[in-house]
Structure formats: C-alpha cells, structure tokens
Length: 199
Image (cartoon, rainbow, N blue to C red; front, side, top):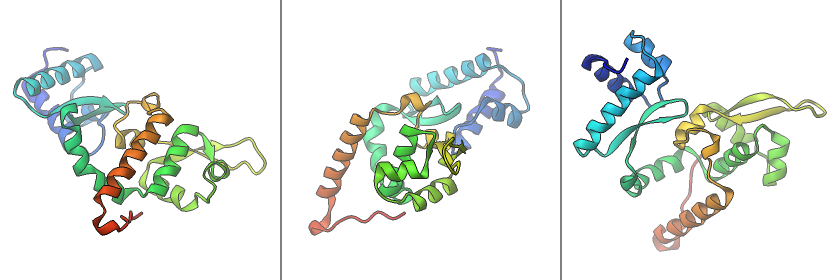
C-alpha cells in the first residue's frame, strides 16, 4: 500500500489540515472511503512531510493522541507561543490548569483527593474541564461512598501536543515553566497592574 495515488494523498492532507484535533486512521478511512493499513498511511505522511521539508514549509504532520495533525516545526515554537499564550489563558485560568495538572499526574483521582492536594474546592474547575472534554469519569473509588474518579482524555493530549501520558513533563519542569511564565507576565504588566485571567 506504499504506492497510493495522488488523489488519496491530497484527501488525507485535506482531512488532517481541516481538523481541529488529531485525526485517527479510522476517521481518514471513513472520510476517504478507501481501505489502507497503518503502514500505507504512514508512507503517505512521510511523503507529505518530505515535500514540506523540501519546499521549506514551517509545519509537518505528527502522530499524537492516537491520530495525526499538523504542527509547526520546533524553530518556530517561540513565535507560535506568543500567538497561543493569550488564547490558552482565555480558555483555562490558572486555577483550572492547576486542577488539570493534579488530575493528569494523579489519575484516576477523586474530588476529595484533588481538594486535599490543592487545599481548595475543585468543584468549579472539574465542571469546566468536564464541559470542555479535557477530563472524564473513569469509574468509582473503592472507598466509602464510592466517589467518582477522574482522568484526562484524548482532547487533553491533543491540547498539549502529547502522544501519551508518558510525554508529560516532570514536575520540576512544570515548576520551571510556571516560574518563567510568571516572570514574563510581571515584565509585561503595564504600570505594575496585575494581569487577570478569565475562566
């Protein structure tokens, strides 16, 4: 299946380009109406990426979260961060990000366990994260009352461009990133005013 025709190659490219999340091989098969195995699809992806590299494109197709999507090349990371940072801040406040981090690193985890770690109620954050599809119910804990347990979803992996939970940064790296962001936010404040992040 390594000699797929140009039309199918263009269809695959268009489907991945148009999607806002990682596209699985099953979805690509369904949309194109063609049957091919993962090796055949990977051959098309490799060919497309070779063309992007040859023509100096700033993006490649990557396999993440069990599917494929377009991502910019590493050398443009700083430029893209400037574009995305305000968008991510609008979508997820710091408090919600903290709850998401607790869930990501401790899943499956209950509301009570999250509150014990953070020291404040996670009710609002959990509701927002469930609504946005970044976490899901994973079952019930074997403790009195059998409280619900939560874990992250594929949308969470997609949001942070992770292939799997194994790609989560170490907690030390998270602290360094947060410290760097806090320093940048402080320097960016007009006349010492605090920046306010919305939920």
